[in-house]
Image 1 (cartoon, rainbow, N blue to C red):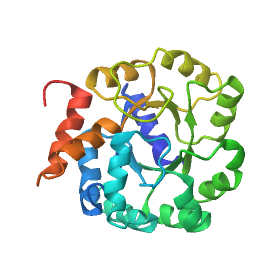
Image 2: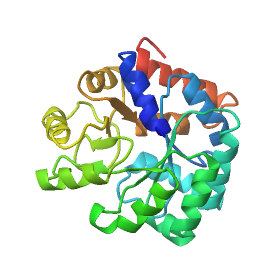
Image 3: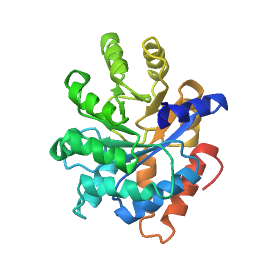
Image 4: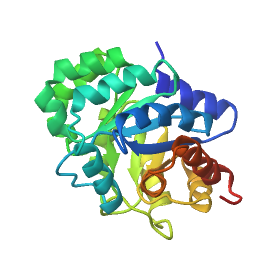
Length: 266
């Protein structure tokens, strides 16, 4: 059976389109708002949604997402709360959801318990930023048992051997990090993206999405010219931070996402 993420990319390819993949931090500003935001993201053009799990030591995240994680952690939420929230989100939308997490929260809950609950909640994929392919055999097996795609990151510094190994372990799509360093808005896209895409495609036929630093319509369109999807995280999370006191926060974030994909003014 074809999984939802693969179906999404197949549908987009057939229609000559590329994926828009927004990232938000679960629980920011609170879980009730997260449950409202995800369906609004789909209405605003999201093809896949990345849902970040707050963690106290976010090594790959820049200041914007670190602040979002701190705001969520202040509520005292834990991983089961986020999984329960996805179950509620599933009553409103079928958009594919990828959990973006560090390994510690998953390990603490337990691989089997996490996979069971994630699958039951309606999650489609998992991206664990700090687990390497060499250490991921048990993790990958458990996720695969529950039809959860395992997405891995390729960095600009990855060797050809490393790229091949990552592609071998990845399901759903390959996530190409656009630059070295942490997440955050950047003014221009790295010149390494196109050469890295060529190298990745030598090892896999999976779609490739580019993220880290994609922050305005020009950059989204530039990524769409060469890759299969564009991931926008910090720019959206920063907008959530800016608009957090607004009663119509989901609508405002929807407007911002439509600006990212369509251009114009906001």
